[in-house]
Image (cartoon, rainbow, N blue to C red):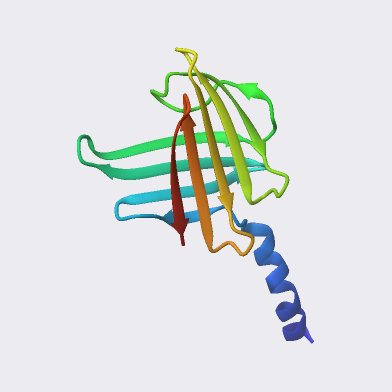
Length: 136
């Protein structure tokens, strides 16, 4: 009887600890995105990439998806404040709107596919955008 109970409850326990948007994501060679849930609707997001002019570049920020505007914990970002939203399909989408000290608006969207196999990341700065598609 105990063995049967373990088999029934194990998938439910795994579902609590994992989210479609969390994990290590890889794009083109040299581009990695790591999203870790650190608390209730709070995520550490690390973006690592290899550039031709600056070598290895890492950006890391911690965000809370509550729709409130607050300073971001992002060293050297020049950000005055940011608002973070969880999409209607939470936990598969995180949207960030950041106003920099120079007034520029940066919008970022992290969106996992419903099955959790891929993630798209889009970043728009003053009307100019870039998009990455990641897989596990």
